[in-house]
Image (tube, rainbow, N blue to C red; front, side):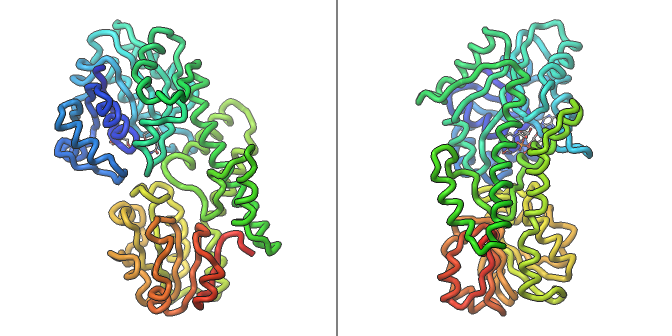
Length: 436
Ligand SMILES: NC(=O)c1ccc[n+]([C@@H]2O[C@H](COP(=O)([O-])OP(=O)(O)OC[C@H]3O[C@@H](n4cnc5c(N)ncnc54)[C@H](O)[C@@H]3O)[C@@H](O)[C@H]2O)c1
């Protein structure tokens, strides 16, 4: 099939590469000229395992190409994916400017029948808005399909190539058939392609993210209680997750969720509900708990060093919002670093992939931050170590070396990845989350 994917960010680039990998002819389109120039040379602007090889392979096979020329791409394609950003506006609602811009250019460039696929996460009702925006500008037949994406950064290729389910929002049976044909190769093990009306498809994405976020916030709330009672949330998590009705994923307490999806999608859902005068107390609480949770380590840091933190230096391991990505959007590290630096702390930071992005996200505090090239370099001369993002390489480090590098052997474990008994034996003071 002849496909254009508009927006070559974390989602669009994966969608374009994976569809090309399956034999389709795909054009990746973006307004960012620098990004497109780099992609033409198979230089990947983001860190996503396996993506570079896949893009390279498909560029060489000429199934994948990149351009900034959207009108020509529209003319050359039958299926047009919109995968541009939907960042939060001032009131928390999703900013639809980029999606509607693309829709209008599509409308002006139509030269035959097209299927427009909304891959971006968009509020309920957007399918209709996009349909109207295009319909005003063309007499050609077209259909707008809502097809939310559920991939996780860090495992995006696998998630797209082997999805748990594919959601297709359309009332048009013929279009549904084309989408089934497109996605068929990805669900050969029998995972469902769920065809539904567009509003249900749009809301499914928000419901999924709000559910996952609420599991994290729920466990973070339990962690706060566990800590006060002397219980250990890590033990509780294992037992709770073993219940087959509950399961283990997304029950890990820590410094809260971040990233480009959960925070903004939870807020956008709250805003949609407000506009429709529907109360969502559970979703609102999920967001509130998470905001507080990002700073959960700060009182522990004060407990150890004293209320006055001026002159303290902390090593920070992990800056990206989660492992295996360089994405810094709404990363808890930003809130933690902002808070401690505001209290007079200097920080020495290290992340295996997110250093370049971190310099941009942490720019307001750059004069108080030392960006280190190695994890142990961050510990040199620091008073203590704060683990924020649980990259694999931080899981089993050389604790004796850390002990010798830190001025005071204390570890604040924001993801509960360390064995506190062992650290105690090695002479460390240990603070986790929810471990009384
Ligand atoms: N990142 C994720 O893990 C994830 C997962 C599922 C869904 N989503 C959703 O997918 C959408 C895209 O997210 P992302 O993380 O890939 O965003 P991103 O910011 O990484 O990428 C968006 C891209 O769109 C481009 N763009 C903006 N306006 C454009 C225009 N008019 N024409 C062409 N290109 C344009 C930008 O230059 C950028 O490259 C969002 O709605 C997001 O909520 C993201």
